[in-house]
Structure formats: structure tokens, C-alpha cells
Image (cartoon, rainbow, N blue to C red):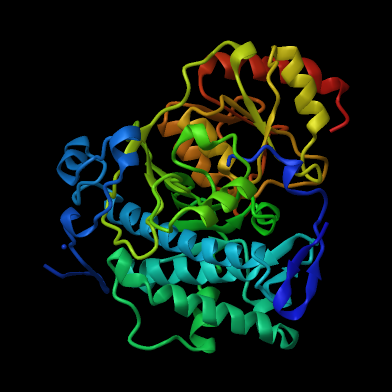
Length: 453
């Protein structure tokens, strides 16, 4: 089956199976640097839904300050606030682009292939531009260094004019909504050269010293173009150590009971219910700060609604399940860079009996941090190198939610070596607790010699 972009009658390849390939989880204005933030009280939001009353208790700003996570005087507090705002904006952009693709009103230039043959969409570069703009605007250009997955060369090629035009249009549309997120929008629409310059700022190569952001603009692009799970992942690293992580999951609902529903069902329900319906709380953002011992989740801000930090934050924690027979484990959907056969063998030897949760992107990390799953295992095939933007945000969120993430030798992941997780011992193991983690590490040691990895 193919994905159609109907305005040009174009058919896009489906890169494998259909939607059912994977189990679908489904202030007074004041100047702060060069960024003007707007203080909007909750009474202006009209945002407290029936869901908020039933499913979670809103955490008010005074309460958050007492908890020590959102206090302005706390280290990295501003970086966390603006990081979350940037990801919220980016998720809003992605939802519009994805809806265009799956409703067959896109155009053939919205999906391109990268040199490694993985699909990349207009959303990748647009998100990169939005996050770069937001962080630079709010924290100052001189304070921003970003490692990001996409480079500007592809957009600068002569044959990419339609793609570039789509990116410019998408970015300006999103920037027009900046006041919803407490940020002043540009006085006029940004031109092509300006947007290319903003994207080109994302040219850091990381390393063991200094402070830099790590961005994966659309993690799980296959899931994105299929109308399935994907994530916007942003992390702050300083001197090789992850300090903040923000993970936007636009198709991962706040309410756990909706996890078993496929997105095609959601799309049907969306057409049958009013746009203001509170019956489906689609999308969430998780975030954490190192050393806080807490991880948080908030809903994506609804279209036309105002975002006020910290906007109905709810603390999340990992599952308390430590019996392998009751645990759920996650693994990547794609078989190209991960061995399903090895993880299946490990699962059996450890006593994991439940069907694996195969889901695109870092949503796997979100599932463990929220307590919806207990184990994530990834063992790459020979020659594949794990990239820091595919893990940094998820790792810190799981750790602060009470879980563990290490390589298969039990050592912490090393984010100080540049763009890749150099020195990784065989694979990555993330667990909700020490008991499950120890069992899996032991099983890896026992099984590795007979594997073909």
C-alpha cells in the first residue's frame, strides 16, 4: 500500500508494511535575554478539562516552585522552560504536517529520501528551524550550540527548491503562533536566507567539554509518514553529561486507556466529534532535569489555546513491576538496525512472556518513564553506530523517573564522544528497576557468545 499526496496525484512508497506493523501507542511583560515572555494567568486559558479533573491534578506554579523544579533561581530552569516551549511548538507543527500527509492533501516534495535511504520530511528541517529560532531568541545566539540530525546542504541544492519553499512556509506559519507560547513572533515573515541561516546554526559536533543542545527533530520518521508514533527529542548536555531532557510525543495520549487504540480509529473519532471535544487527549511532552529525582508530563497545548508554563504538569514514575512474567518490553519496529531475534531470545531466557511492544522512536523511553512498559532492549547489528540524539532525552527522563539505562555491560551511556555513543558495550538496556535490569544484563552475558551480532 502507498501513501498518497493527492494534490499532485503522487504516490509515495510505504517502506514496508502497513499501519498495523507496530503496536501503536497510540509574566507584566519582561525581558529575559532577547526573549519577551508573557505572563498569562490560568483564568485566561479556559483549559481545565474534564480530563484534567479525572485523570490528573494540575500542578500550580506555586506548588512547582516548592518542588524545586520550576523555580527561576534553580540551575537550568530557564533552559528547561524554553526547551519545553520549543518542543511544544515543534509538536504543533508536526501535527499539522502529519495530518496533511495522512489526509492526502500534501505534495510530492514533502517527503524526500536521505543518503541512507530513510525518508525525511519537510517537518524535520522545519522543526530544526523552530527549535533553533526559539532557543536563540530566548537564550541569545551566543549561548546556543546545537547538535542536530539534519544539515542544511540538502535544502541548499538546486533540485530542492520546492522542499525549501515548503519549509519556509511551514516555519513562518508556526512562528505566527509564537505568542501562544509566550514568545513574540518576528515582526515580518522570515525569508529563505534567514531560515537557512537559522538551520545552519545547528552545526555543533558535541564533545567532552562545553554546553550544547542535542536535537532529533522527528525521531521515527517512518512512524511519522505512516501516521503512527514519532517524537521530537531535545536534550541539554554540559561537559559530556545530560542535564535536561524534553521528549514530545504528539501521538502518545495522556490517558493510558487509549493506548490500545489504533490511530485510524482516532482519526474516525476526530471526524465524528467537535474540534473542542475533550474525549481524546492526544499527545504529551515529558521532561526532566538531572538530579531532581522527578520526571514530568504535560499535555500538548491545544490549537488556539495559550501555553502557560508549567501548564498542568503531572509527575510520572516508572512501574513497580519487577516480575519478568508481568513485564512489558519494548523494541524498535525497524529490523534494519536492531536484532529482533536476539531480543526475543533474551526475553524468553529472562522470563518475559508478554507480547513485545514494538513502537517507533523514543516513545519507547516515554513508555517506560510513564510506567506503561518496563524494559527496552536494543542490540544493533554489526556496523551500526548509535547516535546521541536518539537517546539523550529519553535516558535522562527514565533515570529521573526512577529507572535505569546502561549499555549491556551495565555502564552508563557516554555522551561525551561526539555524535555517536562510542565505546558502547554491545547494546542498550533500559529498565524500570534494578531487579529487571540485573536479570537482563546477566542474560546478555550468557547468550552473547552464541549470537551473530
